[in-house]
Length: 451
Ligand code: FHN
Image 1 (cartoon, rainbow, N blue to C red):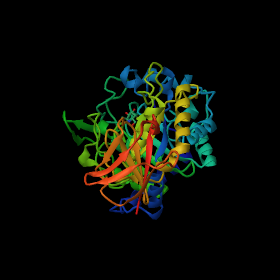
Image 2 (image 1 turned 180 degrees about the horizontal axis):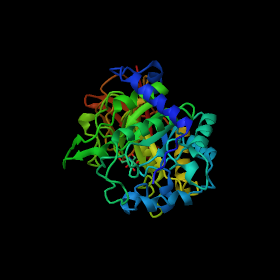
Image 3 (image 1 turned 90 degrees about the vertical axis):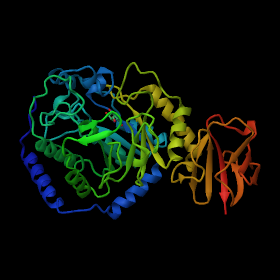
Image 4 (image 1 turned 30 degrees about the horizontal axis):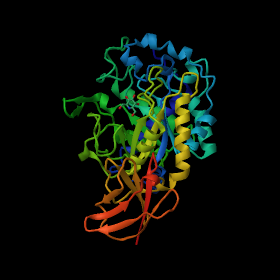
């Protein structure tokens, strides 16, 4: 079962965390610091990041929810770390792959719902250094590679834990997992998370943000909407602690609700802001005004899934990125590395293809915001200054009427070759002539200049 390390370091961390908590309770009303505002601006412009779901679950090749889905007892699941030996792990290669794909940041799971820490934690032995034959802190290695290459690093951190005895009351998930005691102390669990977040924000250099997940485990689902939370997550202490340790670190929480005070960006899972095709996502009325980030998988799984061959084509991935930008949102695109540390070759290839596209067209994505043409089935628009980029993703007729543009156009051209686009300002909008031979199979980008 669980053994805490009672080291001097541990006691020091406890003291730091409790002192910080004591001080921070006296800070009502969150005002983002200048550093934080600057980080938000950077984030808004970055537009593209790599999500990495990696943990001991990857050994079973059945996704990161395998403990819950196969009802694996705590005792049996605890055998997994003993097999985790990612000898082919090459953080430099991961970072290079992300960079070449045009990504500006990486968000990696430091601890997922299974409760296993992928970093060297002093407050539990259930971590990669203490329990695996590999014995190295993979997050430290990745952080060093990111810092060397100028890629920012976020840590995903699960609030929910299927193993920790103090994660009590239990939430909606993990009910079939045997070996979870029937008691626990919630406050101790919160203190445990504070230690770990303190470690993550102290031992890994500059961290761009913390990506929280699992809030919903403690929320009742009323059939058509989220109900009450049965615990106090104590965000009023967790958030200030994070901001105090690293003022520039952005906080996002995947609770699918309107952002809470203290958060710095709003995330959307497998849905664009304002859409809720999953049914359990964020209601359109809950879309706020913080920077947005949408996350998506390359196949259908977050953690490595051996049998999941539903890999999206590079074209589909590019469309996801373009549509996200056209909704003012970043795209955080996921890979689930294999247990030996390699990323599935299909995903490496697709990312390389997306990167080739970004090298040519990144100007129409990075640093842009949603343009004046509202997202449609056929495409979206992005904008930078007086230039609007119309991304025509799915249109097969010679004329395209843009009803959102009624005036102010000075010229229109194809972004790919700079060739002119024939256009006419009509009473109904801007009418573009799009000859078939000028259309790009992936994305025909039309650049519209305004006065
Ligand atoms: O349960 C997790 C899931 O495993 C994965 O981490 C995704 C990523 O957005 N978030 C949760 C589901 O909402």
